[in-house]
Length: 337
Image 1 (cartoon, rainbow, N blue to C red):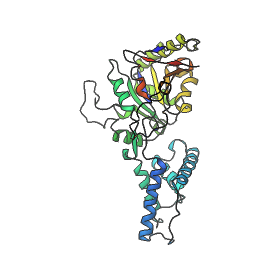
Image 2 (image 1 turned 135 degrees about the horizontal axis):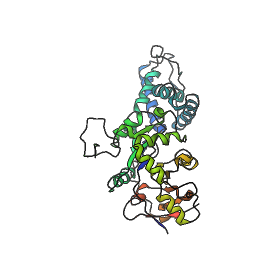
Image 3 (image 1 turned 120 degrees about the horizontal axis):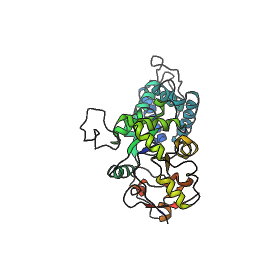
Image 4 (image 1 turned 120 degrees about the vertical axis):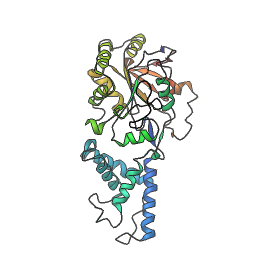
């Protein structure tokens, strides 16, 4: 089995939702719990203007409603158009069948207040959990002699920073105790500018422009130019043999990690301007709960690291299996087409 050892990476970026953290319990469970509390309050205090209780909704129905509401809002107001708070309030109201135009003054049943209660619940790290492989993996990278710049590229809004900060991954805003590099050594992500959000950039993955924006934010221009100059050419990246694939992977300076292939990985392969990037597709099996110990699978087959797309893509089920990739030993890989 070939062994892959990579030179120091300049950038390691990660998707946020579904890669670094995930709702715990699930969105539908949290929505259901909050709705049932709201419904109980109305029944208990008889403040429903129609003198009738809101309908009972199962977690499954809430989950279906949420998916429809989210998809419809994303289509009609792409990239949080109209403001992120208003965007999410509309999704929440549509999920529960509330009138989106209801104002606080008109709202005898408190639907507006309830929608904001749900919004604030997910505007806090208490609603989320970090996948257990994230902190060990990133901590190992930062202990390397030439650590990469670690950032986040997310199709999200400013709440992501609040969540990452609450989970202990993103540094608090200045002032803070700094190390010799001018960054707080206690945190895996150094500052707010290292979190690139689609709501602020103006386009979301798979649009390649969000990755180019990340380059300019995460690296000085001179370093980015050097990485581009050293990247394998399109001809070189047309790998034919295992050795070719290894050589291509070793020539990549930036790596992005994500759990959605179409959004996180595919644009890196289809865009000539992103030939400095490689993708790490995290396919956790069997989608474990972050609150569990998430022990690494015992089976070598389940734990294999696959190198594909001519050396441009690594696929893993646990990021801890890549801890030595940029270290002294490297990792064994299965090379696929």
